[in-house]
Image 1 (cartoon, chains in turn red, orange):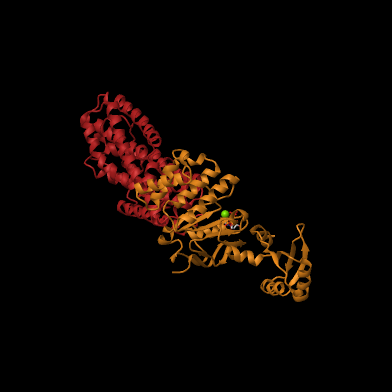
Image 2 (image 1 turned 90 degrees about the horizontal axis):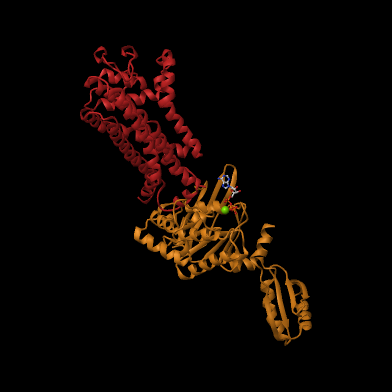
Length: 308
Length: 310
Ligand SMILES: Nc1ncnc2c1ncn2[C@@H]1O[C@H](COP(=O)(O)OP(=O)(O)OP(=O)(O)O)[C@@H](O)[C@H]1O
Ligand SMILES: [Mg+2]
């Protein structure tokens, strides 16, 4: 318990929280203005305004609020949590007390996971509030977005679990803290930036070489899509169109190339079908299992380790 | 209950092919201070870390008060002060001590009380609300030793508690240990590569080199074993005494010299000690010589150390 609270306090250091929240807020403010001038102040139908807002909002959450900066911050913090104890040598003190090594791993991980959930939820709420106040969106649209929040938090539960368990494992597998962090950052950048960029060049080989098995962007996208389509908000074709630009989960043939912010005639669009290379339930199970195994493996590694 | 608080059996640690600790059978008596002495790289820290459960032995095992070393019960009995000063960069002295106390299972209030008590005991008052990472080596050592004591351990394991300290700080630490030993029901296991400073403190010593125990026993036993066999003697008639010695027990005697004060320095052969001491009585009473001084010259641990590690 002591170890958990101590780790939690370390993770929730105010400057760390503030830096993260600030980075988050800047983008929220910019987006608020974009929505205001490009959508709400133009003569668009309510339906179009709603679809564009929801599409953009979902992308923002996926890529940014719970995406690149969030995951990089949480994994780096997660890696330091154990790595610092090794580096400063305090681990040899910890393991010589009666607290078990299993408990050390679990306390640290739990602190990290709970911090991730708290910060993620805070970020979602703060992000929406900022956008609302800056853009002056109608309360009808706001209401719709608020309804999406529970499902975004379910997604947060999932992605938080995967990345926290992986970063704990990483910090035990890789001796250098820097190397472990770089590895995790590379994976995150790959998922959210590199893979989507290069995917269009690989379409020819995509199915033949089972590339979707390595396409973490696709897999996460599919899972994200699963969570958001569970909410009351209908994923209209135009929302799918916007999502499709960043997450390659929809069938391109049925997609129309549109200007992100000016979807004027939604009637033209038909609903896109999701590319089901993989079953989303299998994915959810598979990744949850991976997270769980990472935790077990972390415990085993620390158990066997000589703390020099 | 065994007379030993710590016992190991063939305890071994290999790093790759290198044998850092090689089948050692360590025995540490209850309520004694045992010195664990060896040069750099002897394997002291490796042994200690196996006892505290940080390193897993390659072979063999050990027990602490009957509990397997590294087990929860075993670890609950120890207080361990590592050789390096290990602190969290963001904690003050009091926060650090309380934190370690709570990690070791104390309640918040008990941890605070205990921490304050130790701060007083070690004279660390002015350091209470400052961060130890900026302190002098002496202060750091005191804090490291205090954190080891916070759970009232039955065994205190100290890895080079006096390394890198100036004489004042060194004496302070050793005095505190001496006091602890007298005041509490505690056994202390203390590693060092400096022998002389431990000589006044320890009851037992284990000399250690290249992963092996070279010599082990009470301080007296060890000294006896390495005694050079020199006696300082003065009698009412030194000449007669020497004559009679040469007559009755020439075989036991290696050398006799006279020191500047006029005392005889009699060097006897190894293992001649008992016979020599037995024969002195009859000689002096038979020849009516009176014995004014009869002292076996002490050998210092330093000399033993030089002897072993030369
Ligand atoms: N993790 C390790 N990997 C390989 N060799 C090691 C490791 N730890 C220690 N050794 C080696 O084991 C030997 C014993 O080391 P140890 O630290 O136990 O010695 P020591 O008696 O504590 O020495 P010192 O007085 O320098 O502290 C040394 O030769 C050291 O190089
Ligand atoms: Mg050492």
